[in-house]
Image 1 (cartoon, rainbow, N blue to C red):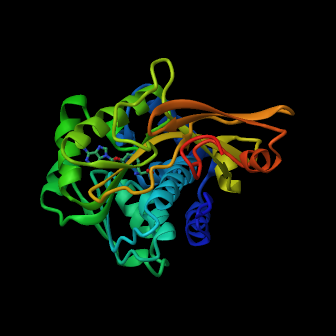
Image 2 (cartoon, rainbow, N blue to C red):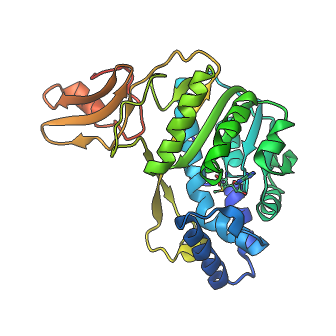
Image 3 (tube, rainbow, N blue to C red):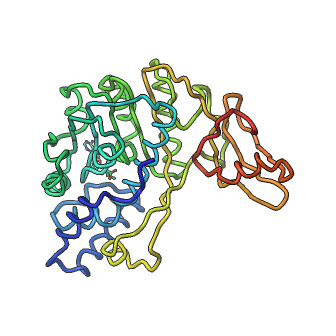
Length: 327
Ligand SMILES: C[S@@+](CC[C@H](N)C(=O)[O-])C[C@H]1O[C@@H](n2cnc3c(N)ncnc32)[C@H](O)[C@@H]1O
């Protein structure tokens, strides 16, 4: 399992970029950018070097943690997956490329695409001292146009991108992403009902085009969750000192909620039941809500079945069970 913390090289590069800059100014920019997102805006608000850095300090640790958690889940169901090439679409400061490089030592080529000049410049700066990422190709352009003449890659990632694409363009973008996927496509979105809705629409569309779900679902059928419930996960991550200062935060960690789907062209042999919420551990039993090949299930493991109970105490939200029902 790759940890959710930013790699040391990236942490150092971010801290170095902050040297000599006003933390107050950077914090104000981060607040403005967050407000723009909350009001339904997008990364178009990031127009300068200082904006790009404020965005990266405020959001990169969390989006990195979400992508890493999603890739870890993919590795569990596809332990033999060893991609050589990555296409990171809507790459921003390069977050998903850093995460994929950590998870897959096999990756040799990194192609990033994004429309935002300031985020592209920051990404190139951040990876200057990275042995593996320094050779990345970062193309600037609108995703659909840039994708149309991109080479396919073994792993394609769109992290926190789809929400920035208009509803009418999403279908075309999804087809293009899939057409450039040699093996696996990972889509990550915020873990909100609307982020989940975007994931589930895209999932359905691409299953119709022949995709299979590698994670999180143990099936390719309709999602068994009904509104107001939605499928999402949470990843705890440590906050950097600069991250805390920029956010005016007191706690040394935060929890990022995210939704994701990993779709593959290969047969998925390991269909593992997924834990959909924090399991409840009591003195009587452990109970957990699961998504299984047969639909939703509640697994209950009584304390008196000692070995099973001890194992069930390690279940966690987002994790899988070895078998498709209670142990
Ligand atoms: C919220 S940021 C996510 C950045 C990065 N993937 C991450 O996870 O940290 C969304 C990114 O998508 C890019 N983007 C949005 N719409 C785009 C489009 N139509 N074409 C290319 N890039 C786009 C933005 O410029 C921005 O860098």
